[in-house]
Image (tube, rainbow over all chains, first blue to last red; front, side, top):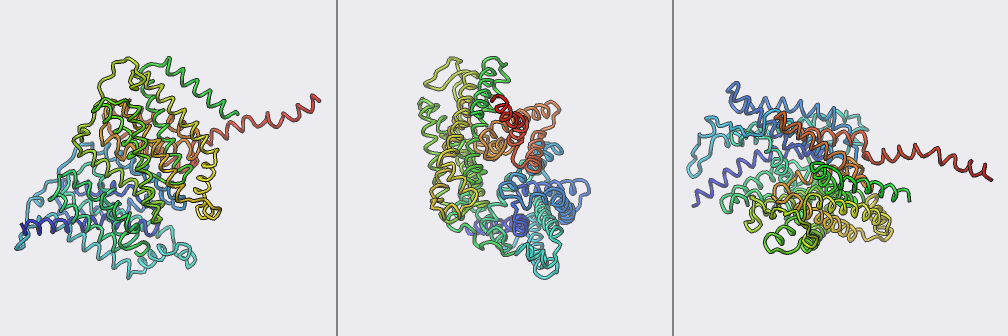
Length: 289
Length: 333
């Protein structure tokens, strides 16, 4: 019984790290630009498809697929910001939200047109291999995804903290006008921020491609999951996103064990409602990145 | 006066459509009118009250399920179901608003709370065997005979129900926006601290506007369920419906009285056309692409929607006569 619980807990933590990476993308974009990327789930699904095709066509390891996803999605996000999102950054929130709903409809439509509605299983050999560590047995795909996500989160955190661009980004998040006054190239900072956010989503998508079937309809679930994760931790907070990811991952895993499958999907929302009611700004407040 | 006249003309045309158009067009227009009404309720909340909801499907679904459960399971008239649904949705809206505004959860956070509540309800209804779970709740097939006390009839009957609802929505919005409440709500939308400084109890008014909007959405949802003949949690409470509800007012013009109707008239037939083209070419998702592009372009190029643009155009056409009128009067003297 204990080992069952440990296993569930471990797999929850592992998936939680990947959720954390997805949420990090959303939270960085919100923290710096104050826009909520409603199309985040679509970007995760882009990543899943990149992972699927990379493994399918070239039979590369998942890590390489994740690297491809990172590069592709970074440029995608950069261009999306520079071409479209930039025009709406100073508009009222509800207009931004509607634009992003439009983008999310557009992307999900493109995914449907390009790949069709049928799920494509990425079942590689990796999906069936496991590692045993005494009490707990972990499946290799999950472990690999979690380690990669964890390393990336740490690297990104270090980059934001210590590099000069990271400082510029944090300054822009803190005070846009102040950043402009001291001569920051705010449009570029915004575009790179959006690129980083999209890359986080894409990499997370590629990492989980052995675990989930590639399917356009996944996008809505991922968008909502990312929202829940980010709000649990506090919109705009770096450590909050990570913590939120772990909380949601573990909660989902425990719910899958204790309740009916349909309850498992309801639990994050119940958690979100409770948190919004009692700690509306999440565990970590806002602003800090 | 001119506005009422124009409105009356539109409704005479729509009545004639209901009497003489072919069945496919009538069923399409029924949906257009219903979504015009649902959009009206959403518009009341954002366009006048200043609160963004992206989970309006929650209220629509509550209305639909109240009507459906009472009618299908107990044979109780949809009129009672509609009233009950409006009470339930109004209370749920009030509770949500109270919970979030109590802690100053607003703007984006409130919008996210509405999504979370709608998704939570969708999953709950999807797992609730009594209301049909994911398999849905089916109304008995219409006999074609019109039963007003049970709100049952053919497609033509529902067209006029939808038309009446849309007319009620427009008249209601117009009356509300001209009343004390309308001024208070708009003041609150534009500048909440200023409204509060003038003695407006914004907390209560926010709860009130959300509650009224939710109750109206539930009424629309009840009729939508009857029109569709079946209720599925994924389609009546899903994100997709919330998005469909807001497209009309956004395209037509936020906060305007005629915006939701104009927007629905433009957007929903376009959506149907695109999905028909997509089906015949075997390209699913074409309608999503069109909707997405339309939303982005409207916010980009016409942030006030198409109705204010049309209204400006009408004014520009009428302007010369107004300029000339005093001259003519002088000439008569």
